[in-house]
Image (cartoon, rainbow, N blue to C red; front, side):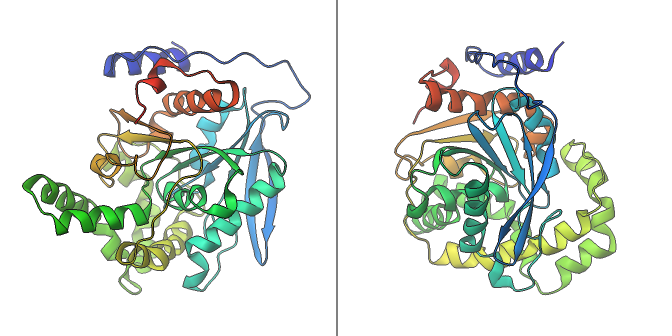
Length: 337
């Protein structure tokens, strides 16, 4: 069975949504679709290691990875999309082959926004990009898609397993101010899922944990706890140690002093129902922040780009085709909020 057929069978067994429309094939060009080409983007003193697949003449899709991953997490999904789009993935500062600033303040959302802007200026200066992100990549990408200076630069945003921290801060505050059994259950449930965030704010211990054993054990741990298979990565220990700064630089500031953040592009939220870290409840009330949006539940765990790359690629394709060609698949149309 092909990967596209397997993804279709997976969807049909999970819900009655019809099969998304297929995109039109593109003619053969001088750019081999599934051959990766590496390059570097510079933002001040920070060098970002980036990768590209497909034809630059096609719509650009930018992939932003989460923690403690690097852009390798996107390789299979990028191959799925490269036949139709110009696909770009980059290592977030502190991860993979990108620079790792030493100051905690250098990992704030504003600095990450500057990195993203540098990437899209390099790969698609005259045309808006379609943004796709997972985990901490989604958290920072909410900053991009709600930043007024980037209005018109982002054609669409597909988010998986990563909420806007400001939205979460307001969501938590409202549930504690007007407590009901249901609201308290949801708030406490998310706080329990986020236990590791408190651990990451401890001095030195998270870095020591990654250095002493977690970096080497990470693939086996994911296999055992998440049923997710990843290959060992040379930078895994460093990715885990450096990425802790993302949490320390942003979480408390956003959760305790949340801002009103409204999206300026269409947003698709993919909600893995078996996610052990992000509660589906966090995305139940997004219409106040997203003028045009879709929420799509899937029966999967947290690492959807790794476990179900073809399924996620189909969902990305649904939104891109709607924006680019006005074609709305039945599955996407049924998920509008």
